Amino acid sequence: MTSVLPIGFEIGSMVVLVGILLVDLLLIVRKPHAPSMREASLWVGFYVALALAFAGCIFLLGDVQHGTEFLAGWLTEYSLSIDNLFVFVLILAAFKVPTAYQQRALMVGIVLALIFRGVFILLGAALIERFIWIFFIFGAWLIWTAWQQVKPGGEETAGDSWLIRQVKKVMPITDDYDGGKMRTMVDGKRMWTPFILVFVSLGTTDLLFALDSIPAIFGITQSPFIVFTANVFALMGLRQLYFLLGGLLERLEYLKYGIAFILAFIGVKLVFHALHENELPFINGGEHVTWVPDISTITSLLVILGAMTIATVASLIKANREAKAKGEHLHLGAAEMHEDA
Image (cartoon, rainbow, N blue to C red; front, side, top):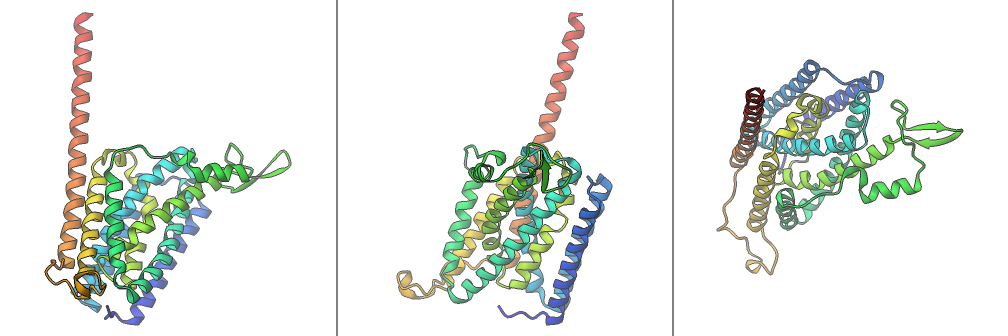
């Protein structure tokens, strides 16, 4: 798809976004702390407002198609980033990262995510331009990933993965943290602190999520600029969202089903698109398959919004019912004890 956005806007947007990320990073390095609810709320609100303002600029400077693609892509990547946040919570808990330095660990995770996604965006754009049939592979991968999201079965804990065990074998690592340092001295010997394990774990997680998120957004738009900016805006404010949501993440039990539905939907959309543009000789004699539906970006946006809304509301309703039932049970137990007395 040929971009209708001014080149100056694209370059300026990239410079501003990188600048904001650098300022955010410097603030963490100079003043590591756990933000208050008010601070986290203000930052998350700022980044969401910034994303919506950016979408407005695309509508004004570009067209409705590009603006809608950005909104759908941003929401998709934001939902996947929240899923990523669940794993970040497990990693930070598994390695017992001090609260004051959790922001630093999260920012490293976000920077690594941006790097991996940037690489995959370039590779994905190059592959799509040359081999349209790559959408068959992207689609199948997303459908398989959706199944992995919801299938029953335990997963390996973050602190005891195969990769972490190998790192421990080859690198001398202390049992305790030394502030926010990566390396420290123990009995005159230079050793790594557990932060190295945290960063390795965050990096591998980011790599796996990039394999899911990039095919997902390429199912919505093939504009590398929109793909990259949607990813940047989805990751901006993620560390503040971590502190803002807190225990709420554990209450969003059905969120994984909403995300799985979105991935499966986009996977099917990619397969349909590949069939529309088909050039493979063993499918329909190498001719385009025109009878499959062409899912519009507006439809995708509505499906994404609907899936996330239903999953979030259903999760909160269940959590409230369970809390109410638990409260009634405790009240009944206290009443019985009073009667016995």
